[in-house]
Structures are given as structure tokens and as C-alpha cells.
Length: 354
Image (cartoon, rainbow, N blue to C red; front, side, top):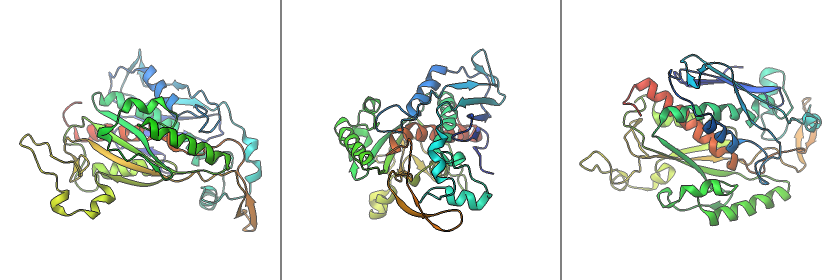
């Protein structure tokens, strides 16, 4: 299986399956001498881990990271940073009933047809359990980026949408509610809706907005390696993501050029920021912002028609522990992937230090 690595210089490779003994990763390219804050890394892991509230999967994992290499006396040595995260709460029997059945809109069918073998226990490598490794890499990237501030929050659950501009929000509200929405009133509505969806045995999608402040000018390459292209690839590599838009996004298609153009101030800043902090594929010093769309989780607690591995009609019904809505736990994953992109592009372009 190819495609297990992300990044060119600051490069993260992950391994492991949802119901294997452990998952883990190797982070290459991290400069030597970085003093790591292990409490900060653990805090990021706690934001992503399962079982943290009543509106997410109740699988209980400590998600404690064991570092194996690349660190000496708390500082990075410049060599590959190896780490593992134990899986301690698997319930593989919950998946025996789908051993030979393809769940609709899941990776079951495509994995089986492509590789001729499929780990049906929790989806194996296709499980979002793998994203815990991305959060480790992203947590280290954040410490490398120093003054850059990356903040993601849930801006929509189903049809319930937070319509305030990010400049109007109090980001301190994000971690005060289980949905991780930056507005208390909207968060309450979202939480109630997710609980209703769970009772129905169904799932719902949503949207995450990410805001990146204090980005230096010059990150990104102007042709194939545009900064927004890398961010888009990073976000679309996350499980359940169906869409990515940055800056004005699709709303910009409804504007005239005279309305959309970001007029310069004398100091090089711009009066508006429809460009989303990126022009010509390169960061321009303004705030980068983008939206990431997540589909409803494919595994639902309702019976659905499907086929089995022999191509015969069958019936699929989810059992066990699953997220009724993935976006609350995906917030730190979005931040982590954004951090990995920025760290990599900083090292590629060798722009001024953060």
C-alpha cells in the first residue's frame, strides 16, 4: 500500500490499523534543538481521542504517546522521531457480522477489490483511528511554528450553521463545549441535534472552519506546489472530508472582480482578504482561512441494503461504538494537518524565521 507519507522535508509517515496492537508514525525533517512541550502534545491528543463526551464514539483510548527516537533530554536531535500509540480498547467482535459484507459508502468494497484482502475490524487502515498519528506530528509542527496561531472550530452541523465571521468570534469558547463551536448558543443547538441523530441510529455531517494567523509572507511555490493546493490535499486526505474552500471560496464566484480584488494599503497589507491570505499560491501575510466539509459517518445503526463479497444482496447494520458526527473530534486533526503543511513549506522555502 502506497501513500502513507505526507510532506517533502517535514515528512510524516504513519502505520497501524484500528484494531491492531498499536498505531504510530515516523516524523522526519524536524530540525535539531527544538525543546518539546510534551504536555502540549498530550493536550492535543486529548482533544482528538474517543470517549471524551456523549456525542462521540464511546471507545475508550488513553492515546498516550510513546516516543522511541529522535529526542534526547527533551530536545529533538534532527534524526527521525519515532512514536507509537497503543490500542487498548478494541472490540473486534463488533465487526464479525460484516466480515463478508460491504457497508454502503465505506472503504470496504474498494479496499477488497484493490488489495484482495480486507481488515474488516473497525475498517483497519481506513479507520480514522490513524489520524491520532497526524495529531502527534501536527503538535510538534505547531511548536516549530512558534508564533503562528492555528485555530479550527465547528461552524456547521447539518443545516445548523454558525453564520458569524471568524473576526466576530471568541475562540476561547471552542473548548468550553463538546461540539467545539466558537459560539455557545449555536453549540447548544448543535449538541442537541447530534444527540437526536444518535437516538435515531443515524449520522450527520458538518463543516470546520480553520483560521491561521501570523503567517509570514513567502510560504508556497507558484506552480504545482501552491500553498492552498497543499492545504487542500492535506484536508482532503482526512477521513470523511468531501470538500475544501479557502478565502472567498464558492461565494467568490458570485462577485465582480471590482468587488473581489483585495486593495493594498501602503504597508503591503490589504483592505479586504477575499484571497484568504494566499496570492499566486504564496502566503501574503494576511490571515489564512478555509472551510472543510465532512460527510455523515458511513456506519449507521440502521439496516441498509448492500452486497456481500460474492456480489449477492445482503443487509448491513452498524454495531458497536461510532461517532454520530465526526466534526467535534476532527477539529484538532484539521489543525494538525494545517501545521504539517506550514512547517514543511517553511523548511522548503527557507523564509524568515517564525
